[in-house]
Length: 131
Image 1: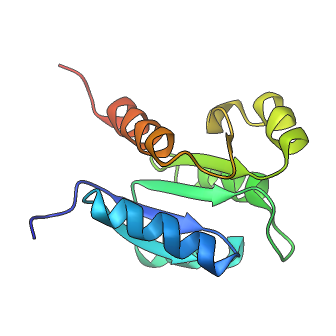
Image 2: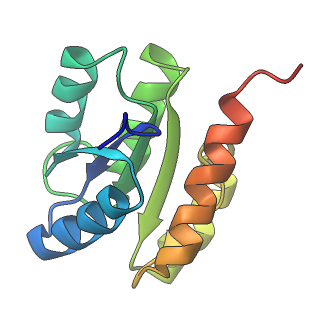
């Protein structure tokens, strides 16, 4: 297998959901890391700082930090990493657009995998310097 196109950190506490999206993204050629909480995600971001291109995180997670808090931590400590948030709760998704403009529109669960892939491709294109 050739080098992956990018490395994506999936942050999702529901194991089956995490496995499903991880398998899909690996099939699309991405290297995938995973975490079940914001705290695990921060540990991964510290350990693999130069490797992670995108964090794909659920908004609602167990522990003291949710996806919004994780996105804020990334913006402060790893601003080069793109963040894509997702939620199964429509109200949270709608509110997030005002709260987290840097995270972009929240993807809703259940995922449309093609929409997830399009969003990732868009985030990667925005990170690539033009010229």
